[in-house]
Length: 270
Image (cartoon, rainbow, N blue to C red):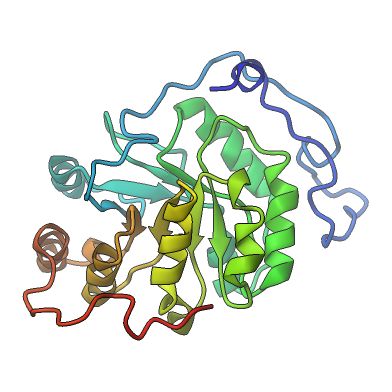
């Protein structure tokens, strides 16, 4: 943890270049006004933050509060990706902090930077997550890359920040700035997810981690494991007990069908 980050987490104005100025009477988060604030409590370190067991795919699900489900998740070491609620990780949980951009985009809303900063302030006081995604512009291509780079300059340096890669970005575009991030977070369309092997290889070549985002099917979970992803998230196991069981089985054993070719075969380079 960097000394300056331990003492003060600072945010400044200038993060919303594509957002119109606040209207008269609008309530604006202090960070957007250019004020600074400090946290006098050093966040506790997650037991798994920054550590991935060799050959193991770290799995995260959605933010569930079901006690029964939480017992199962904790039993298997499966974490949760938090968006709206203040994170409440169990001891050693590999939890994640989502920027909420995809949710806003899916609901037809622009990314709310003020709300994001409020959530970040509360999550920061909880501790250090396994993964945190830098704000991005869904379906924004290179505009999203520039947007994320501007945000990264204002975020606490002691957190593991991942860059969301998506349609419209190339390996060359990302490689030149990869050293600024802890890892890559594979977003984008299903077609773009077909390029996962290349992004995973790029991340590992530079000593970074790779996260296969929104693996909503067992097939995607199997693919994430096959290409050597470090982590993945999915809401698939939250629906039924049967889904949770099949999800865990796929995670632990992989597909039963014999694979004749490696995952790089047929993978289109972005």
